[in-house]
Image 1 (tube, one colour):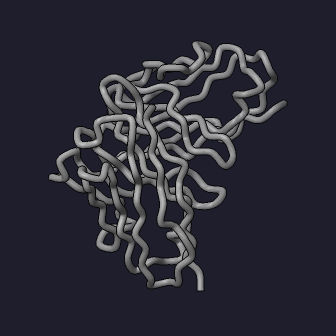
Image 2 (cartoon, chains in turn green, purple):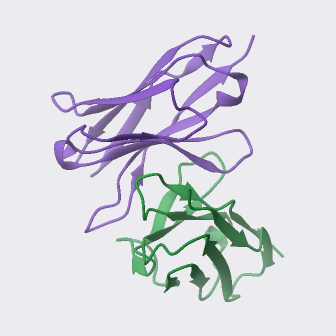
Image 3 (cartoon, rainbow over the protein chains, first blue to last red):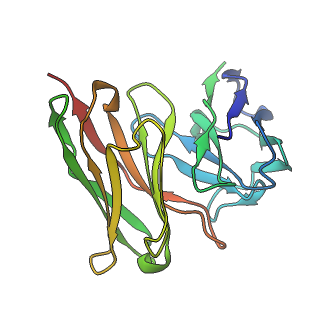
Length: 107
Length: 118
């Protein structure tokens, strides 16, 4: 099974900050990686798929990069609506696996 | 727009069974692979099961293999998750999800809660 790790587990930041999270896969997954945002009591919402493709309707301040085993999600200017938990997910195989998440908190 | 609506959750005793349903609309269901995932209270996301668009391939997480069965009825645009021999650790919010596509990422429903407790 492909294992996913994320860092940091928690990130404290202020509105307007540029923030970057990292996701690593235990083996190469090419670009078959998605990033999700989840707010308390809500379903996960995809932000980025195929490592760097922005989902329709997602603000352009979100961007993704990477391939193989190392990936990043960047928020160029953190907005109040962005305080949430972010998960990476590999879909190189139909047996999806998720990272443990990065929680973005208000500093 | 794409919509997935889960139902069938509830409270069940250990060893019991439940069948979850997920009604899909807004896309060509018969051409879409589907998944079930879950999230235990306060925990992260866990993938549970996959079914290919034509039902020819089904995959399960090790934690549910042999106990859960995924199926689909394209005439009803619905995917199911039959859960048998339920355990306390199966307590979670269960989501269905449309597979990632060429033109867009995965879409998830709002979930249905399953509580396994005596």
